[in-house]
Image: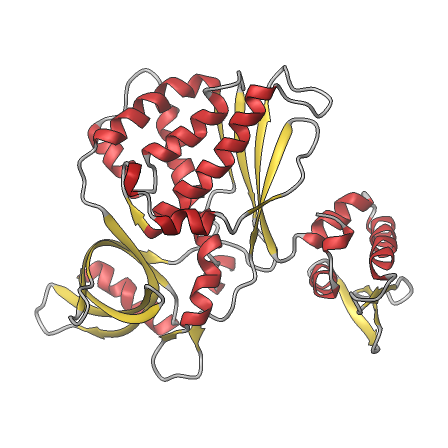
Length: 382
């Protein structure tokens, strides 16, 4: 990520979020200055196709760095990240020096990057302790969307880049909340990363207690959070091979699309955790639990009859590229949340056993219900 990745929209987003305001706009450029400080202005070029556009961006970054007292490279990086998520995988060990890493450790780190994304994509589709030969083809397809950035020196860092430009997910011009199928797919990469964050945070919590092995209940609960044998193997590629002592993952969320505060943005594992993760990797292969589907969508209708102990919910979601209504019931306390989210037109996530036989009404036995925290709502931000 450098000046060549930056366009006019990235610069405008950075400036508007950093205390600058537009003073004047013309067909080829705009003039911006800090709020309340008209004496210090910068010129922002508009035409990314112009021969000198990237040179002008580099000069702009230098000027911003001088005014904000920051390093120009730091400014360039911040501007380029406005509409992307960057997941940094960092390996740290005494053998890492001057931007180099032992060959075995480097291979393990890059293998870990690929396996982490595939396991996250699979867990975003449905939860399973061990995928093996049943790994969804869609998981590989979605993981291929991610891109690798250039490694950075120091502690060896591999950045994984993903899209964070989202379309409007819920129609605003309808009496009932309606999902916009064409926008739903644009959220998948962000959903992958929030799934990965939750799964890694759960795995890290399990490894903190090293004087005993995880119980079966803990293993099943971990699966609910997206932990799988494949995820464990991905972490072990980094800390279990190549003599890497510390492996950490940092999620740099796009400033234009923050996640809920409850989503972890930094998780780390050290070499001492490898033994517990090895055990869990094997245990998950033997875990017997039904495969649960994950659905994302909005609530279309609610129904609660007098004296009923469970309320009926009709959710609109996207299945196999088509909009479908899925029906399920919820206990009263969870139903109250559903009623709130329906009023807010807030996207939700449900997990459970799905029966979507073609030609029949789709129904689900729900085991988990929550708001979709892939993108922060107004309440989350406040």
